[in-house]
Length: 107
Image (tube, rainbow, N blue to C red):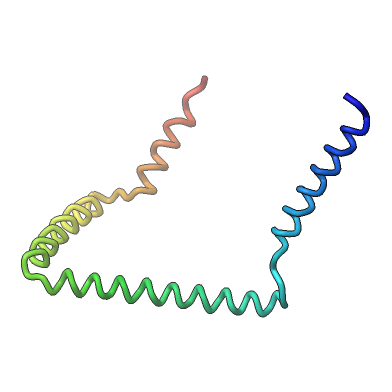
């Protein structure tokens, strides 16, 4: 291998690196304008998702078969949650109990 070959390879590698770097910096314009346009696009996306969720909820409540089934399932799930809460232990208490038990053990 000759020394000239390494120089050519390094040049080609550097050109590819510079080209990739220039492509990644394709943002143009004022950062404030970009932030404003990004904010508007994000708000539009959130509004669209909220509208889709509302439409899905209205569709589910509109169908008689599914609506009654989901409401009965929802009530049983709420009963399970309320019975767990009636016991006086929530998730944080249970996790703390597990951590306290582990602190006493030595390896």
